[in-house]
Amino acid sequence: MKGLTFGGVVGIVTSPHTRRAGQHHKGTGVERFGSATRRAGVRVQEPRLRERFLLFRIEDEVYDMGIQGLQEVLLPDGATILARSSHQLCVSVVHRGRSIPVLRMWLLFGDTRTEVSETARVLLAKGKTRSFGLLVDEVLEMVEVDGSQIAPLPTLATILDPACFRGVITHQERVVLLVSEDGLDSLDEVILAEKAGR
Image 1 (tube, rainbow, N blue to C red):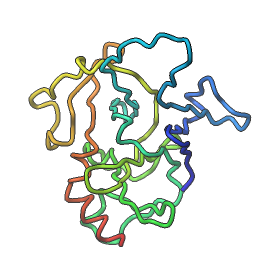
Image 2: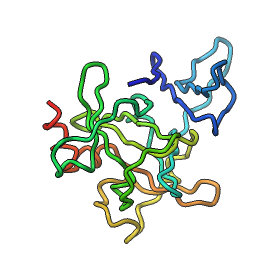
Image 3: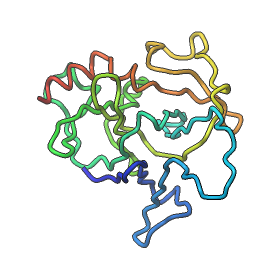
């Protein structure tokens, strides 16, 4: 698996369609996000309860997840379908010598296609009990949101277990569901896929 991590920060591999400042000579946009450092002589304001989220696309819908649970963003090279039909919601990737279950997120939301888009990325996350991945169609951008702006998940917003979501935010006049890495890592499919990959 190819991906980027940096000490204390998250490296995001973006598609050529979403290039931003920080692009290197090979044409792949790389954004680095880390905690701000205190400079001598600069007055530090009281910290605000703000959180950073990574926006990603699945089909035509946009979702997000907090970067506190995000470990790496990887290219989906080498993803393999698990042998048993009960695990088909997940694929398996080998990363740093470990087999990691990866949720094909479009299947989770009811899309039955099998192909992977050219802009697809694997979001390697850490839940309560295990590391797992989210295979998404495209990584979009990083946003910072005041914690008070995270609203509860509306009733009937999704057919999935509400535990898979932390709530919703509004971004550019669009309601965006915030996925919960702790909820997703408790899905039966992820647990079974992890056992199958051992």
